[in-house]
Structures are given as structure tokens and as C-alpha cells.
Image 1: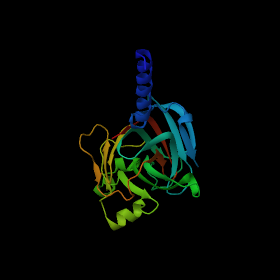
Image 2 (image 1 turned 90 degrees about the horizontal axis):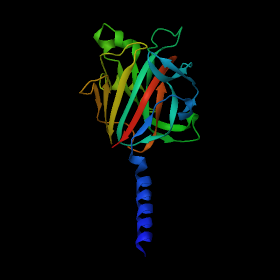
Image 3 (image 1 turned 120 degrees about the vertical axis):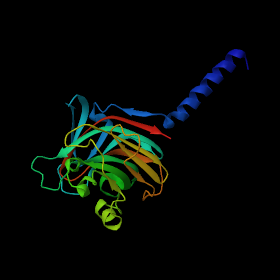
Image 4 (image 1 turned 60 degrees about the horizontal axis):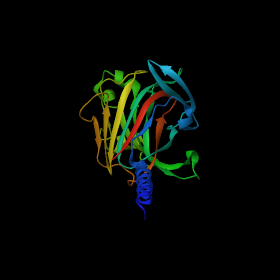
Length: 232
């Protein structure tokens, strides 16, 4: 092989190695277009909300929550960062708290509604951020796992273990959300906190690489901006 041919071969090999490593690189989504999302039983549009370009997603049903899948996004272990603001829909009944958050490690199943048989998720209850009583204030951040471990079952069986208080969460106010995931453990951060407000050491699903996206709960709407997914 001539020196020129050797150089060409090395260049091609380097390019191939680079492409192989793509899946482990940071995935950044400015969320300035709906093209990055697959909405499941939800409405969506792009708008500027309180200084940030964001996707606005609404759930107008009275069920446990609907999904917006981020096209091409997936993760087993790593960190998810996103800016989020949420509120109850106009006219929503008392008890609807502007539920919105992030799901991850979804398991594909085309035979079920939404295309996923299970997923893990963390979310915020925006109106509980205003609560004066300690019990309600302790419900601001919630972990749950679809379909076997909804929030009400987790609260009934293990009160206070899978939810927590977080300062700075309010209705229709931007909040930075960060989730650090490693195998069966997840740490949840809100705002600029250095220590997590909630640590879950027993995520309910088997760890697996899976799709990532946004979750919006009963009769709520939310804005999402600046999504960054960093694999471990």
C-alpha cells in the first residue's frame, strides 16, 4: 500500500470510528420547532414564553398523562437537562396542579396506546410550589413509573419516599430541571441547586436504553425549552 493509500485508509477509519461514537455524544434540542417531537394525543405549537423560545404542549384529557416523544432521543444512563414551565388548563378543576415533566427509558410496543408499554418519569406539580402547608409543599416533585407504579400507589405504599419539596417552582414560571440517571438510581435537581431534592435508589423498571420525551398530566399545559441529553 502506498503512503497515499495508507493515509486515505486511516482517514476513512477515523471517520468510521467517529460515527460509531455518535450515540454517546451530547444530544441538544433547542425546541424551536415541532419537527423534533411526536405528539401523542396532545396539542403543540412553538412560541416565545417569558423570554424563551419553547414548544407549548397541552393535554386536554382527564387521565394520567400523555407524551411528546423527542425524535431520535434515547438514554440508558446519563443526564437530562431541560427548562420547563407549566400550569393547569383554563377552567381545570381544583386538584389539577399543572403536571409536567420528563419521561425516559420508554419500552417500545406498537400494540398499546402511545406506542410504549412502560416508561419512567419525573414531574412537577406547579401549584404545589405555592403551598403553605408542609404536606402539600412536599408534593412538588414526583417520581412514578408507568404503568405499574402510578403516583397514588407510591404515595399510599411509601409515603414521602418518591416525592419532595423544591424551592422556586411556581405556576407558569420557568424552572430548570435536571435528572441524573445511573442504572437503578436517579437524582432530581430543580433550579440551580447543588444537591438533589429527590433521590430514587430503586427505579421500578429494569435499566434499558430507550426513548426520551416530555410528559404532561391531567388537564395541564407546559412549555419546554433547551433540552440537553448527555449520555454517561
